[in-house]
Image 1 (tube, protein in one colour):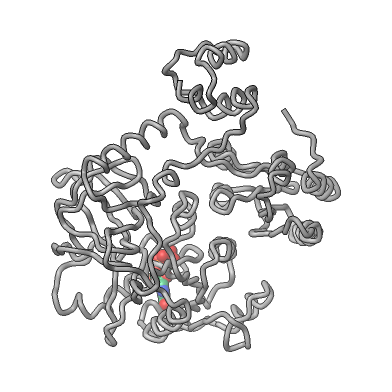
Image 2 (cartoon, helix red, strand yellow):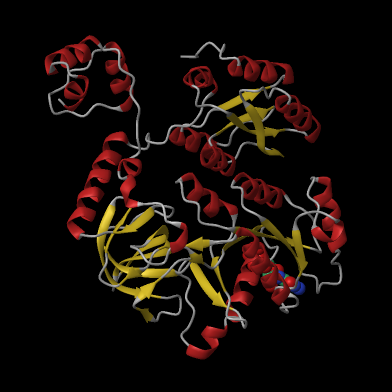
Length: 472
Ligand code: GDP
């Protein structure tokens, strides 16, 4: 019925078109995205899908320049397992001058804020690792301002270190390197600097643009210097937000607590969240009954860059969902219900990712400028050769970016990166793991497998020229 009135045709015409496609539909039935596209096409219309969030665009108005004030940087720590991410987060937590004064035992709520001796603040997301980071990004959340990559100086650059670098770079987040375990007898930070240089990453003391700091997360050596470097990077980024409006931010974690109901940790990104505010997060709504900080203390409000636990949501949103403080609880509930309904109908198909077959069409529409590719392969040599050739395919119309390349089978982490960066994945002499394949199906990520470099290049080239025959 809705579609009929949008196209100004009769409902029976739509129903009979559906019948000709083998679909017997009722007047109130909602059609899935594919059917909508086909039916609309029959009547000479093209369907454009908007995310419910876009439709409600007025929820996030742009801020005028004179309303903006500086805000604390939000930092994520990444790196290879056992290189010291947790130790670093723990040590920094202890340096919090406020915690020392006001007491309260720090709990894990997904993020915490530290106040340094000079009164400056830094917010850390305390689920270390790039999986959480990229999973949030895949949901459209841009939370992190700065990424710290921890590398144990008594070890070397490991596969997860490379992955973390790829993920941070794909997100466009500035990186600061922390060469950890410098207290260990075998530590050799210069070896790490050299390995980074081999990846075209030059640290500052070697004349490059990346800040780096030797530290010991165990003894605390030089962690003050690392924090200073974070503040310096933050200053360059000129991070600001408008604190005087209804809060907007991102869900970091949500869980059901036996005594307290749904406990949601959110990070306020602009505005102020207050006790009593109606709130909308993902597909759920509620009213803020209480706010607590990471020390379990009640607070009345939370401003930009502040992580806070919210009591009072009616359901548990997902990490990476956006939240908005709303004017009325009724409106919040209405939008939440609409989103829930859309989610049920469309399943996980709302997010459409690029496929090779689609490039031609997208080119024709004129909204396709960059092709992001992740290359996985069996040996370094062929990955480099393939990546180089792919980069050279860039034309005036399309820029090819290799946003990640590594030896090894295609992993879930690769698929997440592809999803967050709208990329396709090329496997050369390697295959996806079972779980990666499943996730790729769910996220609709195009994975192409080749055993001959020439075939890979030719197929991508054909796709970029819009000449790839669609595969059915
Ligand atoms: P994560 O897996 O990256 O979170 O690493 P952890 O923080 O759990 O650290 C792994 C191990 O390295 C633990 O046994 C830590 O005590 C140890 N460790 C971490 N940082 C340092 C350091 O700076 N010096 C020394 N000697 N040991 C460290």
